[in-house]
Image (tube, rainbow, N blue to C red; front, side, top):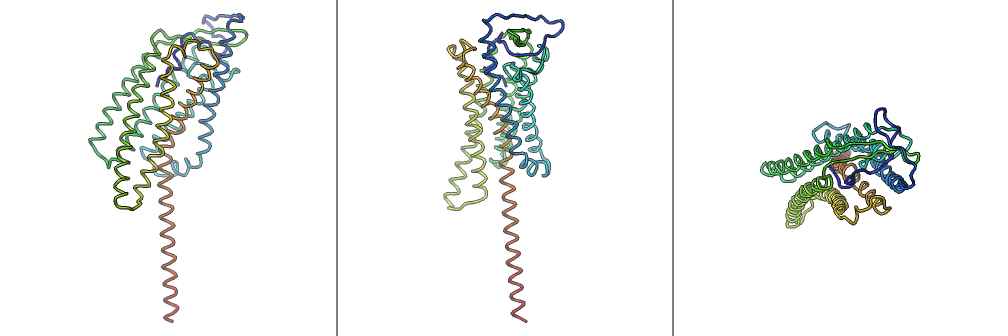
Length: 342
C-alpha cells in the first residue's frame, strides 16, 4: 500500500558509502542541516515502530507456538504466519531503510541502488500484507454469516476490485523511482525522486482501502447486532454470543487503528502540512503515522487470528475441565453406592 508520507521527491536521507559509477554530490553547505536533522528525527520513529513489531512478536511467541505451530495446519495458519513474519521482515528492512528512504541506523552502509531495492521491497511487502489481512477478514465474515455464498461472492468481487487497483498504482510508482547519492556534512544520504504524482496515487490507495474497511466493519456490526438481539430475546448466554463478542472486540480495535492511520495519511493532502518537510512538527506527524501503520498491520492484524484461536483453546480447556469434574463426581457416586451395598 502506498502512503502519502512518501510524497516529497528529492528528500535527503542517510545512506551508505558511494557506489562506483554513480553520481555523488559532496557538500558541507550548512543549508543542508535542516534536512539532516529531519532525517535523524524521522529515524527515531522508524526504530520505535520496528522494535515495537518485534517486541509484540516476542510477547505473543508463546501463544503462537501453542495455538499456531502445535495445532493442525489450515489456511488460517498460513495466513497468520505470512502476515506475522512479513511484518517482522518489513520491520527489519525499515531499520536499514524506512518507507521514506531513511537509513535508521547511520552505521549501515548502503548505495542508492540497494536503497531503491529495499524501498520497492517494503512497498510490495506492505501490499502483500494488506492482501492477506483482507483474506482473513473475508474468512471471518464468511463464517459469521453462516457460510453465505452470496456474501462470499460479493466480498471477493469488491476485494479484488480494490486490490487490483491498488496493485496497479503501486506498480506505477515503483517503476518510476530513481536515486542519487549525496554526502552532506559527513553524512551519507540519498535522494529518492519520483517523476509522477505519488501524492495522488498514495491518497487514492488509502481511499479505496478505507472503503473496504468500512464495508467490512458495517457487515460485522450488522451480524453482531442481529445475534445479540436474538440472544437477548431468549435471555440466554451462549458460546456463539461470547464468540461474537471476541470477534467484535478484535475487529473494532483493528478498525480504530485503521481510521487513525487514514486520518493521518489523508491529512497530507493539506498543502499547509506538506509545505516544509523539514519542520519538526512534520517529522513528528509522519513518525506517528508510521507507528500507527505498523500497529494496525503487523500487531493488530495477526491478533485477528490469534484472539480467536485463544478463545477456542479456552473453550476446549473449559470443556475438558467440565468433563473431568463430571467423571470425578460419577466415580465418587459409584464408590459410595458400592460401599453402602456391602
